[in-house]
Amino acid sequence: MVGFPNSKINLGLNVVEKRADGYHNIETVFYPVQWCDVLEVVEDGRWKMGEGSGMVEDGIEFSTSGLTVDSDLKNNLCARAIQLVKKDFQITEVKMHLHKIIPMGAGLGGGSSDAAFTLKLLNDLFHLKLSNDDLKNYANQIGSDCSFFIDNTPTLASGRGEILEKINLSLNGYFILIVKPDVHISTVDAYKMIMPQFPKQSLKEIIQLPITEWSRNLGMKNDFEIPVFEKYPVVREIKNNLYQQGAIYASMSGSGSAVYGIFEKKEFNKNAFKDCVVWEGILN
Image (cartoon, rainbow, N blue to C red; front, side, top):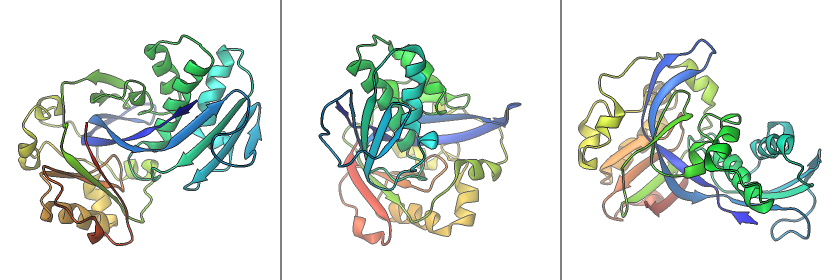
């Protein structure tokens, strides 16, 4: 059984307060983007993708291709998703292959998406009859933004990112260009550079404005941009370049380092971003 774990972008990101448990409460809008990995999960039989047995541990056989993935299954979110389900269900040994395409350390949620799609594929493969709410409960134990990828629709997220509220928002037909420089930003380190504060206006209100007004609204911002831009000027340069090319809105996604631009027409020059990973697509 094969799935295509997609990425996401953040439309605005406010870090509002530090919690007693050491995490932070945020406010952001997650929007799905079709820059995808490829994930295969099988109960038995031959692989459709990949070669070799890869890593084996506790009934999980895991192989990879594409971008380099952590070789320790204890740190692998897909393996963690399987272990969570195995605690509650008597499932057989699982073989899994991940072809990694979405860059890591980019703020695009690729690892969380892989884990969420692992849960969904296990549910279908073993006929577990888990509801989306059940799947989200597992996902919340894996990562703060993991549960978003269960429904995979435009969503206002709060709390650690696990409190989700579907919103009426469509960017269907707009073009998007995502640029990932050769900069890896640790989410933990990024939060250390932030001074939390409550916004004057909620993103829930701002996001309903026409997209042409987002760049002019001071509340439509990503709080991580200021410290990241200061430490990595190349990330700021990418955002400025996207606006110079005609983006109607541009922002860093998550804690970075990927930056996206949203365009009304496909008139951008992706070759302008040297030494970067670049992806273009159409939003749904």
